[in-house]
Image (cartoon, rainbow, N blue to C red; front, top):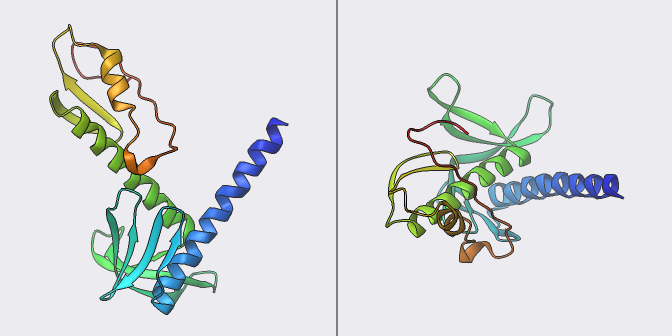
Length: 171
């Protein structure tokens, strides 16, 4: 039973990758606005935009349909490549999904930072906050606050863990 559930989840993820690919292609090729769940894909003024659940937009400069190294259609856009120079980059559904996930994770962290604005946040690393606090501050309360689901992410299962130490270290 558990194997079937994992297989079904994997199939849903792969389907989502290619649904995103189609939505991006429709936005660039036909300048058609497409909704996919809480995501909106649209073309405007020579840019591809993906509106995230938070309402923030990802932007891709001068998108166009190109050919990938396998001879299939793909979206290309201008950006900073591996050479650290401005160049035309190639992308496809799973890469756009990676961008969407990373950007949404950033939005969730920013939401937590706003929730904890009364704390002394000294830095953040990816999905982690470093807070300088009086020893009497409850770690459990901080984790509960960070685990609050933003209003735009209803249905998301979110949990935060933490630890106390005298200096910063990776857990």
